[in-house]
Image (cartoon, rainbow over all chains, first blue to last red; front, side, top):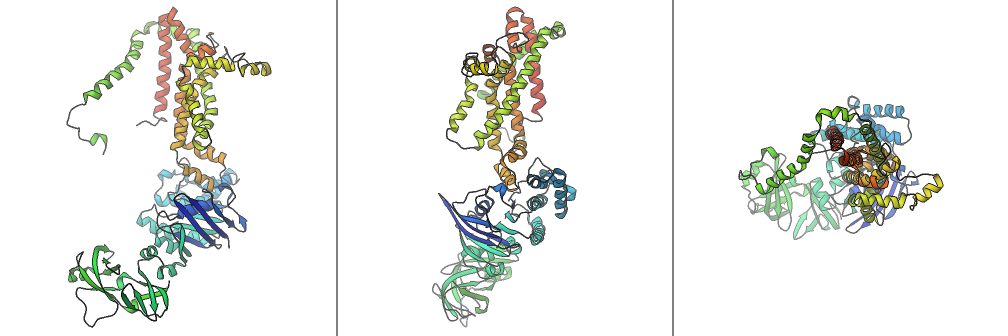
Length: 343
Length: 268
């Protein structure tokens, strides 16, 4: 393990308790809602905020007693924080100069890094002359130029517009693949986390609620927050064989499981009926329409009642069923489109 | 919405505000106009080149500049401590820093005499150990000016430090910059406009300093007689000379302010 950290901090209205292990070359994403403590975790790793308790061990050496400037880290801040009075080149050279590299050599290496992120033409530009995507790349070059062992990325794509984001995300992915140290990334965007990270750690209210590979987390969410992020309906119930009881509704599912379990299915797996369908299909329940909104090419129907759920149907189906908020409706889901796993 | 695009409210000028505002402006400008109207323009050139005038002007510019440099060297770190460090009694320290601001300058001069005078608290020791005497010397003028002007610089720089985004300093620290490097290469450039504005205020205050200077440093032509002292003295013997000296002071202030305002002092 390159990084082993136990981050504990207790404040009047806030608490964070997070164990973190990151292997060399691994990218771990801390994912969570605002106020969950993601950024605090990064600041603790960087030494910008003091630990109440715990430790940070990097490459076998304790880091938690060291001042920020002594730690072998590189950090990319949410709004990049490029020094406004320095050119892009001097921003990248800044860290090298601080690490004792001579002026000419620092500038030469900085120029190399700018070339690597494709900004040779902008070496002399001041940060205010750079676009958001360019500033992000300078910030990344600045953090990587000092050859850190631990790279910290705080919402690295949050300040970019949708188009730039797509492009910068794939570039960032490439640079992270080349980086052989440990990377900890903080984001509230599930897509960023899925694309960039090897492993996700989901934090809510200062604690870990789920961890695993992106695919695993996307398939088997364990909290409502994660389920919303990955776009699944999630329920908790007790399973017996290939049946699971959620509230008063008995679901028949494809897999077999006994004991407390999660049931998950995609909104697109839900079918809606105005009247109780004939032949009484399984997994049928009655719900009230809470809201109707556009969702990509489809329409997302929010269902209320004993089993709150989201259902995605086509605009044609909306017209056909004449759906309006407040209306009562029947909903069903096919057994083969559900997924259960132990709670 | 921009000021110019806004619809006038009910189309009527608020006289209650405009009238005092106009009176206030007249009050500020009228004395300056008086100075310009009564100036002996015909003999101006000849009077300006009088050695006494040049001497006083030179002394004023030199002492005010040195005083400002001293204020910068001592005042910027003081402002940094007030803005960045939390220590017990910080409020008291800030209050102490602003005392010279509200203290009548003559009282400041008396206080300086008691502290740095030949038989003063520290002055005695300075005299016996190093043979340094401050009162009634050119160095004394600098000390008096710095004493009165430093709060202007400290307050201005502290305000700039508080307004500066601390996260730039965080970013510098993650790049391996020690506190001193952060201060020198990040903080100072970021607050440069505030420092320049503070220096201008400080310099202008030092240039016009009268009370503390005459009390602590006396009034010896060529040594401690700065422009304000010369003006005051001339007023009793040669009113026309006083006007000329005043005009010079006014011109210097306006030129400095105008040349710096556009470049450095952030004004709306």
